[in-house]
Amino acid sequence: MRMRRFNPFWEMENMIRNMSNLINSTIEKESEITTDFTPSVDIWEDDVNYYFEFELPGVRKEDIKLTINDDNVLIVSGEKKVDQTLENKTCCRSERTYGHFHRAFQLPDDINSTKVKAKFENGVLQVSVAKSEVKQPKEKLVEVQ
Image (cartoon, rainbow, N blue to C red):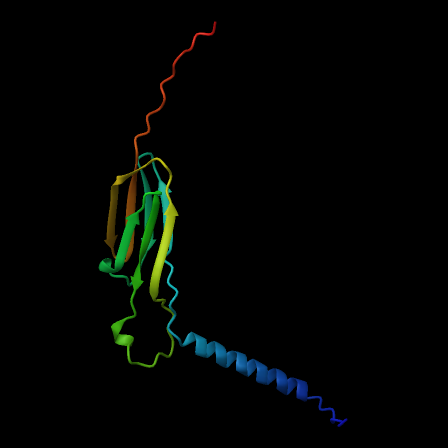
């Protein structure tokens, strides 16, 4: 068995080397273009409609798909494409996100899927889904015998 001479600074040098590797790997990761885009959404309602407001900065109107399926699920999907001016260039830092997105929301049973409106302006998609007119059951007095 070979004996190794104790060096009190060896542990410190090892720690500095590990920190340097950690910092370098973080810098490398930050310089990559990220591809996980999830748009934020606000949802509210009033007596007439349900409202959805999606933040989609940098997304073009023609890259958005909006559907309501037979199970009353509102689906917003699309793609935020990489800026063409960035292609074929070395990226030093990119904090914006790109890529495909998909959001799905289960709607209540009281919607009228034929009365859906959508408007896209300044990177914000506004969707209103009309509530169906639910007829309240009329009260009927039943005579107890």
